[in-house]
Every structure is written in C-alpha cells, then in structure tokens.
Amino acid sequence: MLLAVGSVAEAKKSKFITIDGPNLVAPNGEKFFIRGTNLGNWLNPEGYMFGFSKTNSASIINLMLCQLVGPDFAAEFWRAFKDNYITEKDIDFIVSTGANTIRVPFHYKLFTDEDYMGLTSEQDGFERIDQLVEWCRGKGVYLILDMHDAPGGQTGDNIDDSHGYPWLFESEESQRLYCDIWKRIAQHYKNEPVILGYDLLNEPIAPYFENQAELDAKLAAVYKMGVDAIREVDKNHIILLGGAQWNGNFKPLENTLFDDKIMYTCHRYGGGTDANAIRSFIEFRDRTNRPMYMGEIGHNTDEWMASFCKTMVDNNIGYTFWPYKKIRNSSFVGIKAPEGWRKVIAFSEAPRGTYNEIRKARPNQEEARKILMQFIENSRFENCDIQKGYIRAIQLKVE
Image 1 (spheres, one colour):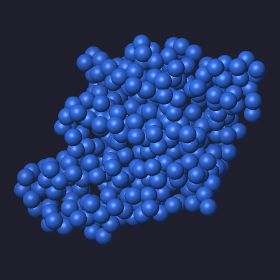
Image 2 (cartoon, helix red, strand yellow):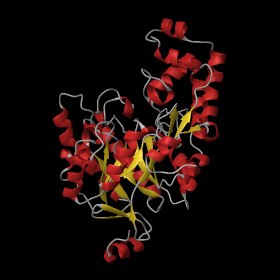
Image 3 (cartoon, one colour):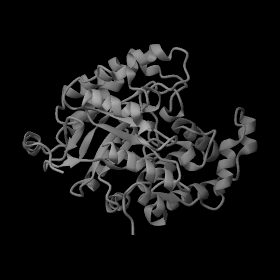
Image 4 (cartoon, one colour):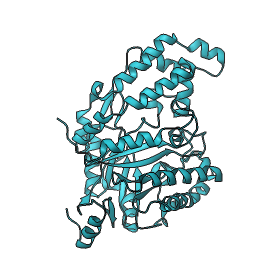
C-alpha cells in the first residue's frame, strides 16, 4: 500500500520509519504495519519464564541464585545467559517468519554502574544492543527499545523489578536518572535507522494503589521529561507512549502530542477478540490521529490469538507478541526444562526468610550449578522447540 504523494516524498527523504496520521511509513514510502515479537527475559529476567512463581523479578531471581550457588557462580550464570539466550540465530529465525519488528525490553541498570546480571560496574547495555543492531541490519527488521524497568519503578509490581510502588513518580532523583539514560541512549542511536523508536515506560502505574488518580495525573509530565531529554539530541526517532494500568488507560494521555513523532502503545491479555475489546484504543487513536500499536499480547490459545490478530489487522493496530522465548510453550520457541530443574524451582519456592531456612532448602551446589548451565544450553535456539501453531496463529509463517 502506497500512501499519499506528500507522505511518500517525506518518507523517502528519511532513512527512518516516519509517521503519517494513524500510519507508520517505511523509507520506501509504503505503509509499515508492525508484526513481530518481544525479546522478553533476555535483558530483564522475569520469574515465570523460568517456571518460577514467587521468585518473580530480576533482583529477586538474582538473590535466589546467590543463595543457591553463590554470588560468583550466579554472576557467571548471568553472563552466559546474556551470551546465549538470544543470538544471531534467533534473529535470523524471527526474520524468517516474516516479522518486521522486535521490541527489546531492558532494565535501566544496564546503563548504570549498579549491580545487575553479573556485572557490578560498567554495565553492558550499549554493547548488547549494538550487537543486536548489527544482527538486524540489512534484514528488514526494526527494533523498538523498551525501558521495561525504570529507576524507582514505574509500575510498582514485579514486572518493573521495583519495591512494590512506582517511586519514579515521587522521586526527582529517579526522574533525572530516567531522563539521563534516555538521553544517552538517544545520543548513541540518533543516526541508527534500524531503531524504529523509543518506548519510554512499560506499563506504568499498576491499578493497586489508593492514590492511583494522583499517580495517573503525573504520567504525562514524566513522559514530557523523557521526550524533552531525547529531543535534545535526537529528532529522528519516534517516541512511544503507553497508557496507565498495563498500557490500557489512555485518559491520562489526552494532551501528549509533544511533537510530530509521537505514537501510542497499548497492551492486552485475554478477553474478547472482536473490535469492541479494543474500542477505547481505536477511539484514542482516531482522536489523536497517531498510530496505535499493541506492544504486548499473548499467553492464549492459538485460536484466540488468530482471531484477535485479524481484529488488529482489520483495525490498523500493529503488534508484537509476548514473548519470543521462554520455558515450555506460548511463545515463538520453547525452552525444554533440563533434568533436575524441579530442584531449582523447589528452592525458589521454599521459605528463605532466615539463613537456617536457606541452608535447609539448598540442594547440592555442584548439582545445582550443572542444572543451571544446562538451562543455558537448552535456551540456545538450536536446542529449542519451535511452536509452529503459535507462529501461524499470529499471521506469520514457519516451515
């Protein structure tokens, strides 16, 4: 589909994805409809993707691993995890399905000197994403960088690795760090066309807090801070703003068209599959005349996903399904649990509130270390199970 002549001319002047009303436009002037996946768990670990339940955020998983096998081996595990969980083979497979976009969730600590995923200083966020950019270059696939875990926490639940409250909206220090990180990211990637855009905050403000209305009222201002920080150094890339309460409530964003490269991102899991299920997203998109994109959806039957994909396509809402890879299924590829993995899960679920409880629950350390490294091996693309029904259900292809 070619857009209006003016839109084509503008797009061809740019090597970046651009915006024309409710549509995205590729550099060749054609409409760009997002289809793809999320690299969840890779740079922001979440417990359920390992099969854990109580041990459910990055810092809590790391603490559990330190108790299980010691901090030095835990650091070794995380470095191997980052090296192997996503490789160029994964990217090539994603491209082979016809996907054109990959959303990349990351923890803000990857751009600080805080202790995170095996490093205690000089974090490797730019190194990891630079490598990903190189893997994607020339393959027709774009990246959306998603700050999934913001300083202080933007959600107040396990998904942002916070302390149970969205302190970002209360802390000027956290806000300054959030802006500084986005400015440094934008400075680094300002001329990189493989980057489609910057997703400022994942699922801000969970619906659990008595002062939710007060928090919601601060969301637009915090977004404006991030936009201003990015625009100091990067006027090329699109900036994505998600609604409050799991990217579902756009009422706080009615006046957030801060510039001509703002678009919006919604999330949804479960419920109905017809257009009424996303009516509020469609209506907000139509009021703002900007693209709306479903950044996360998934964890359902193939039949449900196929039906909902049709609704999104019919209503011009692009999508990236969550996640690309995790233990077991409901993803592009599934990781097989290594033999003995139940012992790791049992330790993660056991009471560990005292040192005595830790000692009683801990399995043999040598065995635990072997099991953890086998998980790393099993997570490599060549050892995963391709979920063909899942991929076809979301209107992508697989042999």
